[in-house]
Structures are given as C-alpha cells and as structure tokens.
Image 1: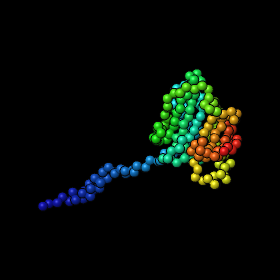
Image 2: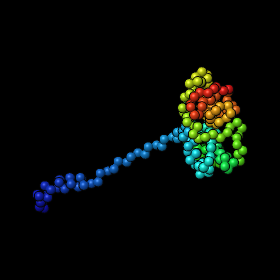
Image 3: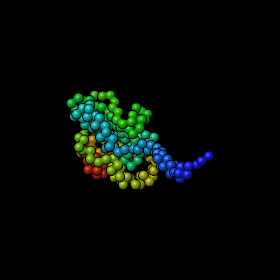
Image 4: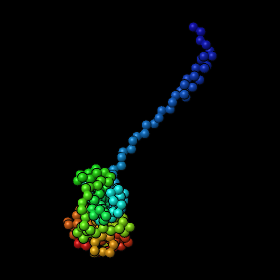
Amino acid sequence: MTINRRSLLLAPAIILTSACSEAPKQEVKKKEPEKPPEAVTGRYAFYQMYAAARNWATDLQPLQLASIHLKEVKSGEGKSGAWQCMFVSPSKGRLKTYTYSVIEAGGNLHKGVFASLEESFSGSRGQAKPFLIAALKTDSDEVWKTAADKSKEYMKKNPDVPVSFLLESTPRFPNPAWRVVWGERVSQSNYSIFVDATSGEYLVTGR
C-alpha cells in the first residue's frame, strides 16, 4: 500500500484547522438566588399607594399611615414589610384604605398596592383629621433616628420590643406627627415618641 507523503504532511494542519473551527463552548452562568424581600420606609410605601389612589379621587388627602409587622420580613430602623394608608375624598365624602406589601401575606395583604372597599367619611375619625400631602416632609427612617436618640435608656431596658409607626394629624400638634410606638399596637404600648412630620423635630415623649 502506497502512502502519499504530501497527505501525511497536511494531516496535522487539517486536524489543527478542524479544532480551531469548532464553536467555543459557552459558559453556563449559575442563576443567582433571589434576594429576600426587604422592608421599606413609610414615605416610599405612601407614594406607591398615593399613585394608585389618584385613580379613585383626584382631591384625596391622607388621614392615617401605619406600619404593619410581617413575620416573613425583617423590619427595623424605620422600615416595615407592609404599610397601610387611609385616604379620604372631601368631594365624595368617602374613605378608602390602601395597603402596600413587599410580599403576599395573610390578613388580606397582597404584594404591591391593594385597595379595600369604600366607606363613608364625615370629616374625621376619632382625633385624626385629613392633612395636606405637602406636610409629609420626613420619612420613617429619619424619624426613627430622632426617636432612638431620645430613647436610649428605654431601648437598653427593652431590647426586644417591636417598634411600630403611626402618622396622623390631631389637635394635639399644629402639624401632622409621626408616633414611634414601642409595641405592635398603640393600645398595648407604654412608651412612644412623637416627631413633627414636616420639620422632623422631636415633639414629646408619650406613655
């Protein structure tokens, strides 16, 4: 059997060319695990709800903004996994409650903004009365810093008490005020700090 010498010389080049012409293997990127949902500030949640509520009434005003504790989402330093806001429409004489949550949760909480049914409104609810949106110039994380600075001794003695936030306008103060409440509910709390929602200044310590 006769072997072509020229073929033998070309064989390595052919093999090399074939190897180079093969498509490079693409690296398979590992999918990064989703980040756990994070708590948000009250003002951030408020504007998410406000944008949706504008479709209900253009003359709406906030009546009350409150944090909601979620077991699945770590809260702290002025942030919470869910918030609730009551809006009123003077022209309609109606009230509508909205919630904003970072997850689907129990208690009729849905991820994102969710609206409840309308209710009648006569001008106030308890001591709370509607206020102008422009008066809300401080956020809950800023308020937390002020409240924490005034509550070092209490926090030292009660390190595990959850903190809640309530924003409303009452006859007690000229501007709407944040109430930083140590406890899940105002009725169950024996300590709270009031902060002016417009100026961010400390107002008073409540029991």
